[in-house]
Length: 155
Image 1 (cartoon, helix red, strand yellow):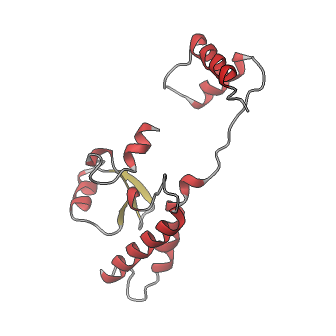
Image 2 (cartoon, rainbow, N blue to C red):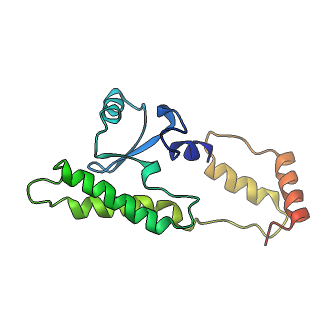
Image 3 (tube, rainbow, N blue to C red):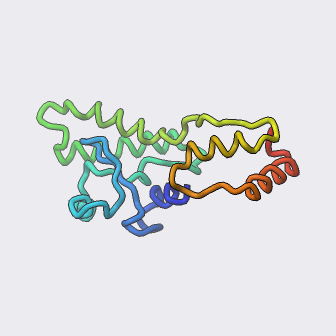
């Protein structure tokens, strides 16, 4: 989550290497310094490489309106730079991609809820999700469960 929060911060808030971009043409995500080509496109303000911070409004109370304004601004900029081709055939496609991009974090996540005290179930789920990452210890699991019951977080 920390990496994601860095990736969607604005240009002034984080370093290029941590910022994330979406390539409208190829439908690919890139971090700022993934390759020299990506870095050059960012430095040249390549219009088809959109910073996620321009379309993701995570903490905004009026995110839908801000998203519509951002999509309109980006589409207008692409139109001015003739990035849709002679027949403007990509305008609707890019608009749809930008809208999907801007709403990707509003989806409901599937969550597994454990209603019993069987730590083995939590260990099994964690090991399936966390291939090669941080290990989950019995002590850590028990402390989470104690905190959850103390603060009634299971509801």
